[in-house]
Picture (tube, rainbow, N blue to C red):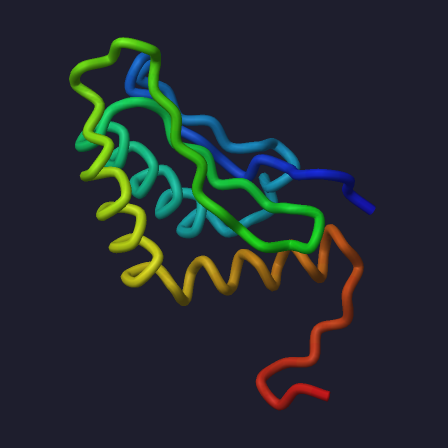
Amino acid sequence: MYQDEIVLCGSSAYSRKFYLNEEFGSLPESIREELKIMCVLYTEDIGGTLQLVFDEEGTLSFRTECDEGDLLYDEIGSVLKIKQLQRDKAELLESLEMYFKVFFLGEEYLGEEGP
């Protein structure tokens, strides 16, 4: 069981790098590429850093930061972009949460029909 949180992936406008946690290397290539594109485009548009993080219950959230004094970081744009990503990528994000809950937290997959 995971305690606290685990980072799925992240991107930095400062180092111009993308990171995918090696524990998620078994994700399909298309999903890994979609995550990379999503994170890199975010940091190119907004600046700073972006991480997708699972909490101990398997909920996936977006975490952003910027260096102190970074005048190019778009704080308002960040909030709007994250809302857009949550809306446009809802199916992907929900699938990733289910994947994490089943394969990392050991929960039973109930499918579309539920209990």
